[in-house]
Length: 205
Image (cartoon, rainbow, N blue to C red; front, side, top):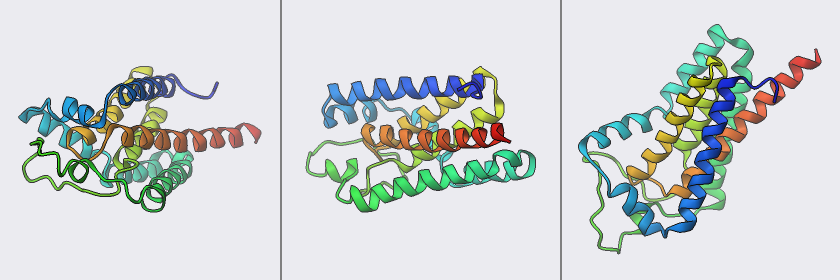
């Protein structure tokens, strides 16, 4: 872990805090209560904020970061690509091959009669809930942001943004908290793996 910068360590600290707190949360509350606590506390400002946060994990920003790496930080470009491929492959494989019957909140609670908060105009998915692809992408990508920026406070900020994306997926009624916890673990695990391999190869030269 000597090669892990203060930013990466701060990011991992946020990740661990999120995982521990998240698993305690899903262990203490039923799914209905989880969604009512998160989706039920809504406001127009939160609607806008969490739509912006969730968009950071979509294709454009990870691709822009990849372009930046190839242009200015080529040493990290391939580990970034490999970790992106592994994270995406694992998440999509779990979604479509393992948890094929995992309903998202809209379908899961379809017969509950509860009026949930749905952001106007937002497309809500109903299937392939486990794990959260947006969350996996966010934790994967912001791990590499922490690698690049190095200072501990940037790692802290990157970690908080990743957690914000995870929370947004539940707030926007797209996922259950457990989906985001698994997605986050895959995203961080994939990035940490190839980051460590990269430095192991560098130190052996």
